[in-house]
Image (cartoon, rainbow, N blue to C red):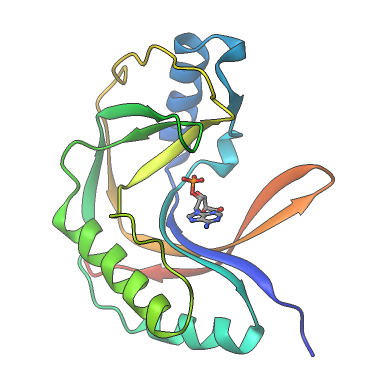
Length: 176
Ligand code: 2AM
């Protein structure tokens, strides 16, 4: 029997945006504000799936592969803190319709396949700092970070030698 994997669908960030974000973060928050998420782990979660068997993973990959959804432009022009989950995040004031539709489809497919889905409304975000338990001043994002999104990914989340590692397992292209 094969092992289960902890999986989620997400958007990756272009390398240059990733770098600009970490520079802005380093300049904007004091070292004790929280635990920075490493550059390679920055992403926008679309649907968290939890621990899945290989069989269930394959079924969800097939469903995701049937999604016919146009690409869109994502603009990161918002930032904030959720004290309850102790995170500082980067987000978008006006999520593109394509992003909301894509996340809704993936979350609905996941729910129908028996993956527990949070009842919270989808709030697209990139977690920048974890364990941010004290309120911090959030400066507005420094640049206009806008980039085209042409695909989404299935990631595996692993905890290896004390570090969280997200490994892309599969790419799903969006329509041109
Ligand atoms: P977060 O960044 O807001 O914590 C991988 O764990 C990704 O899935 C993270 O980006 C995390 O969002 C998201 N996620 C959503 N629901 C989750 C859950 N119940 N457990 C762990 N991660 C979850």
